[in-house]
Image 1 (cartoon, rainbow, N blue to C red):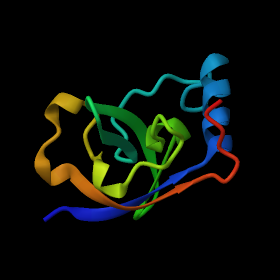
Image 2: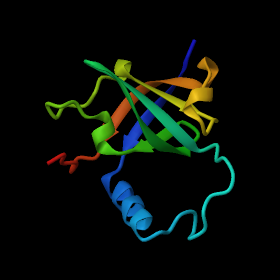
Image 3: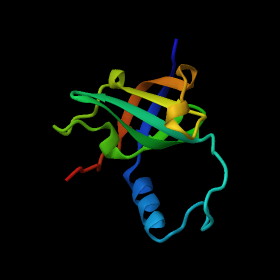
Length: 115
């Protein structure tokens, strides 16, 4: 049985990460040199196939990701049944079933705008 974990979407956090990446600031300005267990893989089951996004484990049961990762093309939030989260591996090809968690809740920032 898969464990459950909620996803929180914070647009401001994503914007800060994008700006830092554009400025070349990675892991405090130094390239990451080892795997980080807080990195999350978010798999999305959408019509027409599956996709994936990245996220970060920010508490024992909370993952933060980008708003577009949990938004349907019509602007609605994806149902939790269409999402699952994997933790503990840095290579998608090595993910095993015991690394995945069900998603229990999606909280998208109230000011998220995919336009």
